[in-house]
Structure formats: C-alpha cells, structure tokens
Length: 232
Image (cartoon, rainbow, N blue to C red; front, side):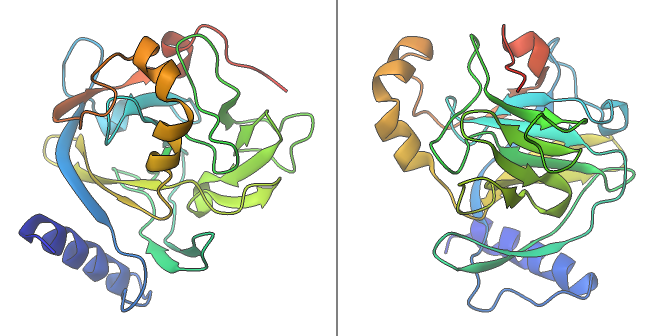
C-alpha cells in the first residue's frame, strides 16, 4: 500500500471507530486516487453549505468518463455497514459537510452499468418516489428499476442490482467549506464499464476517457449536464 492509501485508510478507519463502528480488519478498504477539489462551473470552489437539498449534482471521478452523483440529503447521514456482490464487508463513513448531509456515489448502476450521459440519463436521485419506487429519496435506475438508498450508503432496496453503488469519499474543509474527493469505497465497476462502453466513450469523451481526474472536478446540476433525464 502506498503512503496516500495508508493515510486515507487510517483516516477512515479512525472515523468509523469514532462513530462506534468496527475497524476495517479484513474488510474492503478505500482505494485512494488523486485528491480532487470540487469546483462550480465558473471554476470557483464549490461551497458545501450552498448545495441545494435533494438536487442531483454530477461530477466525474476518478476517471474523466466515470460520473458521480453528489447529493445534499438535507439531514445528517450516519455510517453504515455494507457489502459488495462478492459479500465483502465494508464500513461506509456517512455524510460530510456542515450538517453531515453531503454524500457521493458512482452514477454507474450496479446492474447493467446504466449511467448519465449528456444526451440522456435513466438513473437519478428522486425526492419523490418513481411509479415503481418503493419509497421517496432514492437513486432510481429506470432501465430495470434498481433502487438505492443514498442515506444508507446507496444500499439496494429494490430491483436486480446485486450491490450498493460504489461510494466516492469526500473530505470537507470546514474553514473553506470546500469538498475534496480522494478515494472510492465498495464495489468498483470501472473495468466492466470501460469494456462495455469503449466505443461510445471514444466518441463522447475522446481519448481522455481513461485519464484520471486531477486537480479539480467541475460539479454541475444534472439538469445542466444532461439534456433528457428520464422519469419513470
């Protein structure tokens, strides 16, 4: 493990212990990537306290082609114990920000890898339940109705998905009110995603699709990123 991975794992493990949760032990550990500051469309630091509650925001991390949902759930979000489709346990640390209400998850559905593009998105957070939704305030994939609870680490509540959405870990700087993405946690599906969409990504994103995001990541409202967010 490199120094950055070690520090990230120790930090998260300490946070879990502080919340009374078990340390990692043999559990899935965070995978450290570049530390990336979240900024708005003007390039200014994104202020966590200014994120609108229950609104879909999108940025890309850890690759330029892999989208992430950023959500302010409007309430404190507690840590959760979860597991991958291989039944590997992990401890998700919960929300960050002034009210511990800000969370981030890969926007790649864990069933058939449906994801938001600039043209269309079949997956999004829904404040009000979808027609086939099991409750309000879920991330709902309209392709085959996999439903994830972002307040419980994107745990699967319904549908064919076999694991939670991969979490993106954020650090909140209280003095600057800024957010920095630094790792993922849970079942990554990036290799499968690139294999499935290689041709499409080469057109939509170009040769940089596999590049790691570094420095800064631009956060946009889903309605500004995607032309057609499907409602089901």
